[in-house]
Image (cartoon, rainbow, N blue to C red; front, side):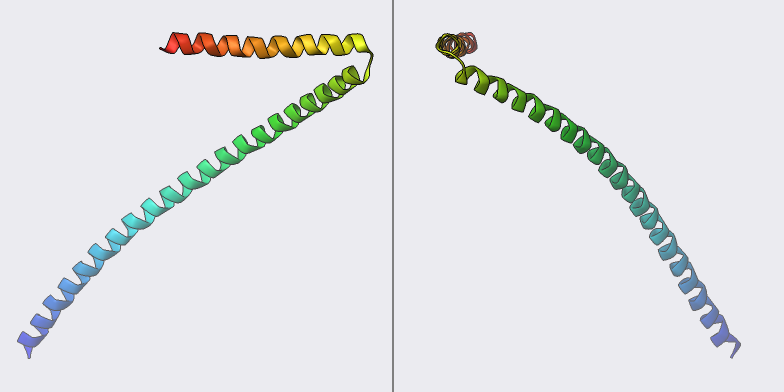
Length: 109
């Protein structure tokens, strides 16, 4: 009967050692997952801050564009002289755009 207890003790020791190894492996994986969760949390906070900044930038751009549209509408509704100036400015902008496009295409080729 002593031999049976000795064999049983060695099996228990092997099982205990295996359980300790598995527990250490699990603890390592849990710490990695915890670190990953903290990294994800930090990244989410950074992205939320970035999106909040973009929201304020879009709001300011919206205000700027709405003011420009109001001034443009006022200019179009005003007298004939302003319409002529508006046409000259529009044609000048289109010509400048095509001139810049031509120059950039020449430089790249």
